[in-house]
Amino acid sequence: MTSNAQGARDDDLDAFIADVGTVVSAGGSEEDVTEQVAARLRRLLAVGLQLPGSITAPRAERYVMRPLHVDPGGAFSIACAVWDVGQSTPVHGHETWGVVGIHSGVEREVGYVKPVREDEPLAVRTEADWGPGEVTVCCTTEDDVHQVACGSDIPCVGIHVYGADIGTLPRRSYEPTTGHQSWFVSHWG
Image (tube, rainbow, N blue to C red; front, side):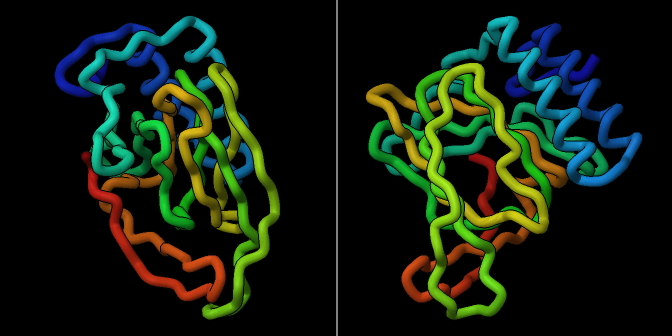
C-alpha cells in the first residue's frame, strides 16, 4: 500500500492510487486512459472519500493544489485542489491529460478553444458547473485550455488526476483577450 499526503492512510485512496497506476502502466490512448481513470474516480467519490482538514482547507491568498500521490517515475499525480469562495485559476493548459472529480462545493469551469497561434484571442468553448461526485475529463493534450473557479458559497475541493507530476510540469497560461501565452509551474502547495 502507498501512503498518501501527510502520512494519512486511507484504504479507499490507496486502492485508487494502485488502480490509477495499473491503468497508466497498461498504456493506451489518452481517451482510453482518461475514461478508465474517470470511472475509478467516480467510484472513489461514491464511497464518501474522507480527507483530513489539513488537505481540504483553503488558502486565503489563492487556490492551492496539495499532492495526494506523485508517482515516483512522474507518470501520474493525484492532487487535492482547493478554491475558496471567490478564487479562480488563470486561464491555463496542462500539457498532459487530466481527470477531475468534485469532493465538495462546486467547481465552475470555462473551457476555451485551444488557439492555433499565439496572440490570438481565445474563444469560449464550454461553461459548466461540477458538483459533488461529478467527474469530468478536464484535458487532453489536444483539448487543454480552461479556467476554474469556486462556484459555490463554500470552498470547492476537487480530486485531480494528471498524466504527469503536475507540481513540476511547465504549463501555459493565457491572457484570454489577447491570447498572449506565458509559461509557469504550479508548485505543490
